[in-house]
Image (cartoon, rainbow, N blue to C red; front, side):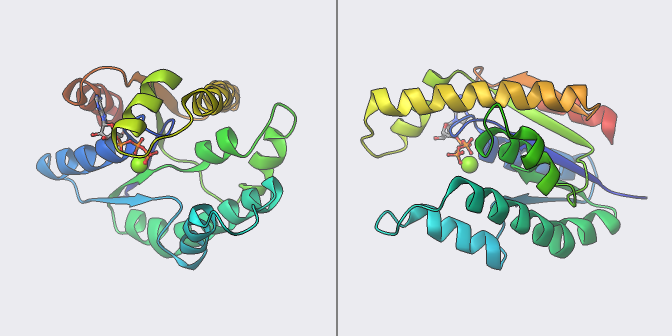
Length: 202
Ligand SMILES: Nc1ncnc2c1ncn2[C@@H]1O[C@H](COP(=O)(O)OP(=O)(O)OP(=O)(O)O)[C@@H](O)[C@H]1O
Ligand SMILES: [Mg+2]
């Protein structure tokens, strides 16, 4: 039996971390070997990315450098974590994958380049885009703590939301297996919608 790679995607606050845990638990209950993972990964490059993003005192990394780091982390993540698990027959659920790079690291003009630097990453067997409005995403993140400049943050979330829609179109045109589910609904409903999308792939 060969395993599968399922990626969950969405804005910050869409609920991908919540749903990754729920999907893995459900897979295990259904008798599958399953494992959760995430990007940035917990490998050397992934840890570096998390540190670089969190360090507000350091000078910001240029967009292109960050894009390359995410792509490099993905190569490491796949080689050292995802591929061995999938090869052993597990269903690996990744909290973010290539679609995050297409959405966060690209503008209208360079999605092709972002896709190109991610060419070493195998396609997920299914990418599930958990769609929420920028407003919902921001409200959930704000409820978790912190006091952001609401207007500025909403602006950013709206920009990322548009980028995600473009990434979805890109992937569909590229014949990649991806679906979107309504992430505005309560967690149980989102979980059920994800399960309905994932179970036919298994
Ligand atoms: N369907 C939902 N309805 C209401 N609240 C939700 C739902 N899903 C998740 N939440 C809550 O919203 C917050 C963000 O959820 P979660 O951490 O899973 O999102 P995320 O997409 O992983 O965010 P990030 O990208 O910041 O890691 C959490 O407090 C979570 O409990
Ligand atoms: Mg998360």
